[in-house]
Image 1: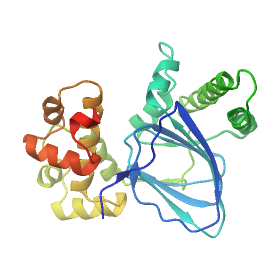
Image 2 (image 1 turned 90 degrees about the vertical axis):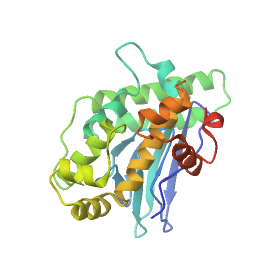
Image 3 (image 1 turned 180 degrees about the vertical axis):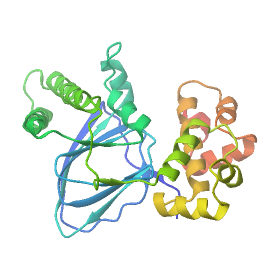
Length: 277
């Protein structure tokens, strides 16, 4: 299977898409450099995010943080309708307040490795009202339309954060996760600079090398080596963009040889680290 590729470019503060598809689609694993909210409205869709499989119901919200590897599996038997919001990270930082970051919901989802928010029935009308107003404002030429768009997007994110930070329970059957593989994924995320060879991980988690490789691929859809390499490179990209020197960033994510890092970086981002910065 090819490595997960980047999809979408966001040059604005945020973008909203209200999509309804009736044709069959096959989407590969991919990631974004921005955060993404998906409000699922209709269809038969299964979503895979970082090794967890979600069986969606109408009004489910998915919180997909930047660099999260994910994929939708769409059954064409029913039209697939959803509202997607792409959120620029600089905009999120600028609009946040001390102790009230607008991307707190994404951080919470990432820390739990659980990205599904099943919205409460009594709040769904409010969600839709704000989104409808946001869609209308995006197409408006009236005075203050751009400022209204900005405020409405913030309002929607405040609603999402309030619900997400309650840590709501989701009934069994809404998702599927392998506890052992989830533990491995969490360990990888926290130790990108460490020894993440198959043998080292198999020893640490008391499983055979063969079982770990095959179970990881079965649960996540990608090989253990591809996953670790991709996560290391995505983290390196974040460090480089934040101002960390390239060689230091490479070392911090586990690349001991710069030539190996440079080759892998070019293959993933199709540019040099200097150009990426």
